[in-house]
Image (cartoon, rainbow, N blue to C red):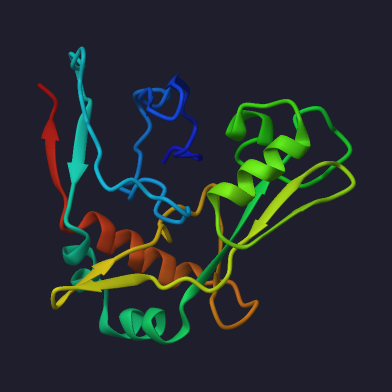
Amino acid sequence: MYPDPSGREKVANNLAHSSLAVPPSFNICPHQEHIVSHRPPTKLLLFAHKPSKVGGEMPLCKASDVWTSLPLKVREQLSKRGVRFLMVRTNANSSASNISASRTWQEHWQTQDVSTARRLAAEQFPGVVTVDEHQTIYVRSPRLEAYKESEGITYYRTQLQNMYSLNWFWGDSDERINNEILEEIMGAVWSPCVVFTWQ
């Protein structure tokens, strides 16, 4: 699995991002784009300018199918407790911190100014944004619902399967969501997927 599914390069300001620049041997987990941000996109344009000669498959699935694929006990816990995330973005210019993170704030927010990065983090994500003495940025979300109901249908609406760049906790405590539940979620995300090859 690719360790950080959010490492994209800007193509145009606030408009589009290129495909992930990852080795073809990596498998990127299905996910909802920026679902934990203040403004997740309402529409996505997926386009293959030049399809892969080998590989390059893409999984798609309905978020409602993901929710119903979850074991009942997991759905009940998610519904009752909610979830929270901790995002950590380290400083590329500091070797003093022993914190490991999937990305630096310079990469994530494409700036060299920590104040700008902090402001962008607060604009983009719910919760509290703090900076430590090594200029590591922490985004601690409030309680979030892991599902959404609309017109009688329940949809999976979080990124618990993104264990690589976000740390996940139960929404009602400081207890980390254990690996057993995260594995159940990973299975539920993959099981209803239809995989197709780009044309």
